Image 1 (cartoon, rainbow, N blue to C red):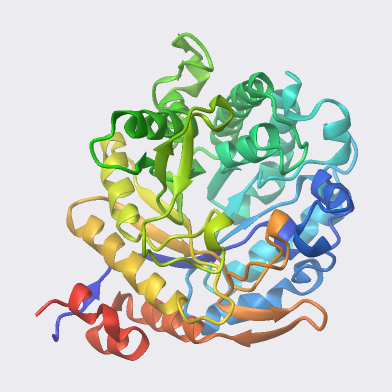
Image 2: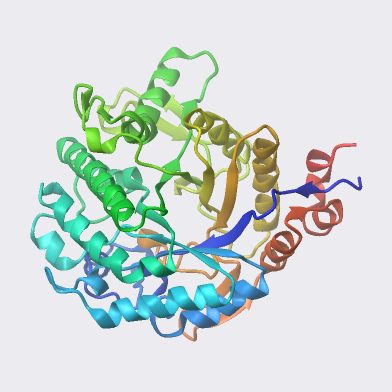
Length: 444
């Protein structure tokens, strides 16, 4: 009972955020426009000031210091930097320089995401990601942004959760542009892949020593009923489309069905220096004879523990074993692994401490097995505007009152700060925050 789980020296402990969800008043992108539509966002919520980072991000940077974080993953807002085609706002770039400098001055290394679900309105009006020109437009934005900020940042995520973006916007139709068009979804996926490759090579041309990757959301679909062939088929189809097609293309350059007939796009080959993983839960899939759902319906484990997202949410079931599984799967690429997001919506914080500890236990297992995991970014520091769920899902280590902007630390903030400070997990910490996990994490 005296042995602690110690993480490697120099391990990255941080939180992750996205510009639109925290900055406030990003009125020049397609998400702001989408929020104004009746019924688009849960309970009619609007992002508004969000967490007011555009004016006061540094106050939350100080909170990161209080929690002993040494890294932070943030994104930049394309519509601020390039508000009209070809016009780059030096004031916006200067503000991002202030943010990055503020992090570095506090001993916090930034990891910058270049695309996190939002596009300028002008980009949408010119066809968005369905237009072939989207690739060069994004590349031009990336080039100017990295030129302006590169001396303050060495690590970049080109695109966040590309297949979530495609699935919600062009398949499920519940995010902008609100379509249900499989062929358009595949076209957008190809363009996003080409844009990632273009951004990867652009960044390396400007910064030879940069580390560049993407943040890939994984769901680890598996058949609901053991041994049921059709359940396995439906789960496998979803994994193929949602996870394998993208990752494989960035490894060997091949556009596999339904993106292409194994044709090779050479610029895609080996375009990730690290594997960024966003993991929240695993999905159990039951076969249903409906091609609109890819022949599968997700169901939860009977009696399984669910988060505040409930039975309709994408962050729902407690499945910490999945973070170990995905680390084992991606070790075949022989690249460092960074957990670029992991967290749980939990307004009253009665689950989050246990979920943090259970997932970090599985991550430590993966490290002990030989996987080169270099960092963990918890989603998120402060409650933020959670896309179509609005203010309904609360992921923050700090509770936020959007009206007053008042922050209140949750117990899990103290837990995460202690883990980061110690670079590990002790039995005493588990006993204090989640005693029911003690036999699992420290058996005997």
